[in-house]
Image 1 (tube, helix red, strand yellow):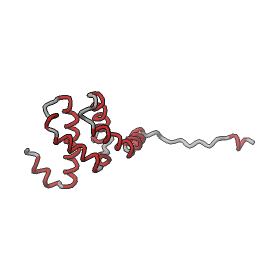
Image 2: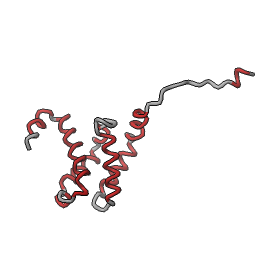
Image 3: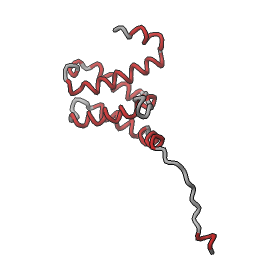
Image 4: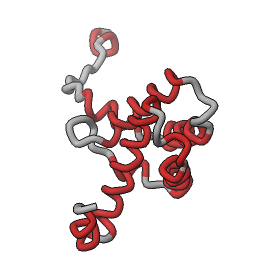
Length: 123
C-alpha cells in the first residue's frame, strides 16, 4: 500500500558545533590525549603539535569552549609534569604545549580560587 511505502522523514537542522562537542568530549578521546601527552618528550614534534591543536579546539572560548572536559585528574597530572619540566622551557617546539597547559590550569584556578588568581596576574 501507499502508506507502507512512504517513509517518514523528520527535518532537522545540522548543528556542527553540537556534533563536534559530542565527538571531541568523549571520555575515550580525553584518555587518548592524556596517554599521548604522557610521552611528550619522545613524541614527534608533529604529534605534539596535533595534540595541542585538538586541545585548543576543545578548550578555547572562540572554538568549542568545553574547558571542563579536560579537568580530569590524570590529565591535570600530565599537565603538571609538563609545566614542571625545566628541560623543555627553553625549547621553542614545546612552547605551544606549555602555553595550553598554563591556560588550562589557570582557568581551573580561576574557577576554584577566583580571588587568588587575580592577585597572581602580576607575576
